[in-house]
Length: 331
Ligand code: NAD
Image (cartoon, rainbow, N blue to C red; front, side):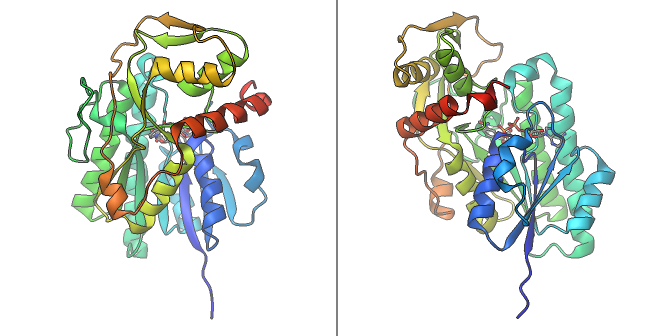
């Protein structure tokens, strides 16, 4: 009996979550080839993928998701059964300084990818195909109390240019699903932590500052609350959504583990045996959301997914990784 390899196209696979995902997926899905299409911006780093670069089931193509000719070429050449869009400008602080860059990649890039995928699958049969958009809890905006949770039907009320462009992309995915019957799924995940995250982000910044004896900068009063998930739990959720999710649906992916920014900084200082007061308060970020918290019961019940990591264990493991891999993040 002939055995046909299936093909997954991943965009933005040289970044933090995408590179963790590719390694996880190649390891767990032996009947798949993975094509990684990435522009290699400052956030993309092929060193993240050293352990799979010689894997015969892995292919890298350098390219921009806004480039119609190149995306069409990749689709026609590799004929993916599944597409997961991780590619994005992802740092909120940068989006305040250069929102247009975020609009281009996150909105126009997603639209271009959707249009190319629609036209490719229309010609080549879209039965059993999937387009998965990797989105964020930040599209829902801020919760100003300690008790509410966002569900998949909560309003989209983004506060930053980053979250507004991610919300725009989600609406385009929804429109393609309704208008063209595109078999698309959206996952909205809380804040991720784990190995290979760029040091501009909060947890790597806390670790790198603590390791080099510099105070950790904290916005405002430090009491903003975030829900944190280990990247490998996010990768498992995306895989389940891809295979078992219903086209047209949205799935919140959260851990239920909430902590204020100041307490997260103190946890990391504690793990490293540094003084708890090694933080410095800096002026509040414009548009800083107070609290994010997801109701993830739909993913728990419909995808039969739940988190493996406890926050304290995951953070301890991540701190150790950054300690042992200083050459990666110091570069
Ligand atoms: P990242 O910044 O680490 O990686 C982004 C990757 O996309 C990089 O490899 C970059 O080179 C690539 N890229 C950027 N612009 C591109 C373009 N125009 N064409 C092709 N490739 C391009 O981001 P991340 O933290 O890994 O996030 C991945 C996805 O997950 C994003 O869509 C983000 O919105 C979403 N997300 C992130 C988090 C989080 O906590 N990091 C939480 C929820 C959702």
